[in-house]
Image (cartoon, rainbow, N blue to C red; front, side, top):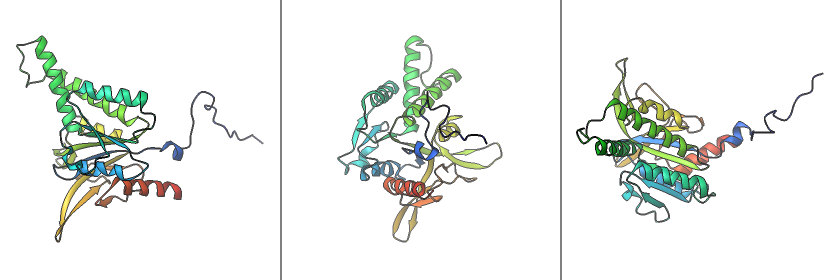
Length: 252
């Protein structure tokens, strides 16, 4: 009878864990219209011991909604290079201090990066129009955004990203909601994340209800790789989502 090998043949040179053990942190992208509550939702990470303390990287200047959360640290950035520097410092010396980082927002990050690219280009070529990037500049900016998203996603901590929403007509003629990013990024960036949610508001009698859709449809780009969030969440919070995900894991 053949002997069943109980230890992975890769264990000598690699850290091999079960699929359940590999899910130590969540990474999520929330997108929606202005005022839908994306930053507010991300800020609720402060309310759970497994997702707090938290650092917000403020790219669009929209952290006023967090003014009643004095325990959230905020760093305002105005260049792609500053964001890269923050990532490098978190990677090198966070040592578990921050349990969650939020990039707010990817839409503004791409615009900020493109401005930096064009300023540098026009500095060398004053004859060029800084408001008319070529295909080369679009490609360069897209690669910067991909690199930053992957780098933050892979940090040993929870990662939240936000973006505005846009409607895009596909080749089939159908119109879908995507994160507001140019070109291929609108479909590529959601692929990098475990949770992608479209956040919108609806009126319920006298109350405004925030609704997060995490199941994709013909109209909405969304997903939940944890399969724990139930498709649609009303008035979502990070602590609530955390508990749903980890309760599901305990029941597996």
